[in-house]
Amino acid sequence: MGKMKFLSLLSLVLFLFITGCGYQLVGDKGIYGGEIRSVYLPVFKNITYEPHTSLYFTDAFTRQLMASGIFEVNKRNAETYLEGVIKDVKTTPNALDKNGIVIEKSLLVYIELSLFRKDGNLIRRWSFSDSHIYRTDDRNIEDYNKKEAIAIVSDRMAKRFCASIMTEY
Image (cartoon, rainbow, N blue to C red; front, side, top):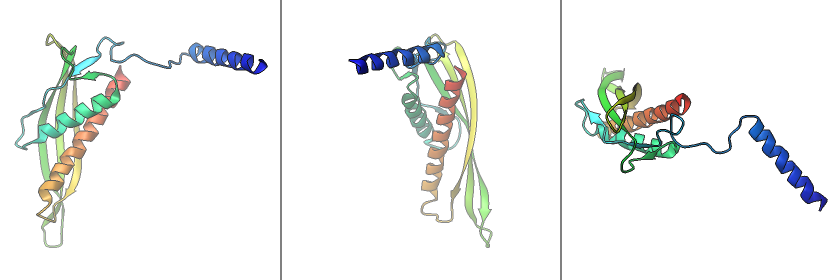
């Protein structure tokens, strides 16, 4: 019986300590104090000449928003929508071999994100850029390496976006 009282007392002390110090065991979903809990993410707009880039970004941002647990993503009648625009994709030579042939290229991507209420009012706008170097010395897999670089850049930008939302709100 003494052990039960001790455990009960310990539980009560622990509870009071945690709640008294401002810690929160379970937080609400959403941002703006839970005002925005759902977001719709349409396919990113691609205003560049690089095909299929929007698919990589849409997939990466959808996965990261879902994994963050902040929002319900692509829910019917979502409170907000997130519009992504791929503004620029630049590919430049990064390294040459001894014969002057490009063996590495640098991929640089610029995107803009805008969060809107469902009535169309802008809540916030973000801009991100990121780069990645990929190999081009084997012409048979150069295109694959470029697509992999786009996937890597899109994942990193999506993670940075989710991290910025968590810290801002």
